[in-house]
Length: 186
Image (cartoon, rainbow, N blue to C red):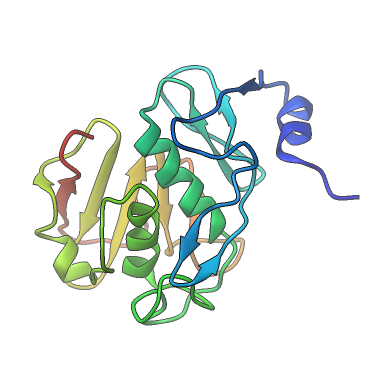
């Protein structure tokens, strides 16, 4: 039997608050990405506080997060089980798999923070310099990942498979110097 996100939250002892993000539909159908409408895990579930929680691989947005951050988390949740595919997410938004920069671009696109996917080099100069309050994108010429509301969105370091996944540890397993960027206002 498949459990719902609400059921998973109840089983983990977390309090479930049902809040409707501004501009989101009641059923949270996910919107359209490159002509494909994508379904997603419940987007109306939130947790108290200012940090997202990870429940069975799904990021649950904090209730205090701005609507744009909730949308970024929703978007990332849509592709959280896709496989790693080099170049994935660059030719089209909805793809069979995603590489690191394709996954970060897809998440940012969820809130309209990007209009076209960027590779990791492009993300090195995107947005504003330094870490943001809600989103920090870490990028160098070989890898990129993001920390969104306290969770890491990354394609590297998974023991559960390869591809975009959420992690509670905010440091990537990929070593090196990263440019740190954030969207204006977040």
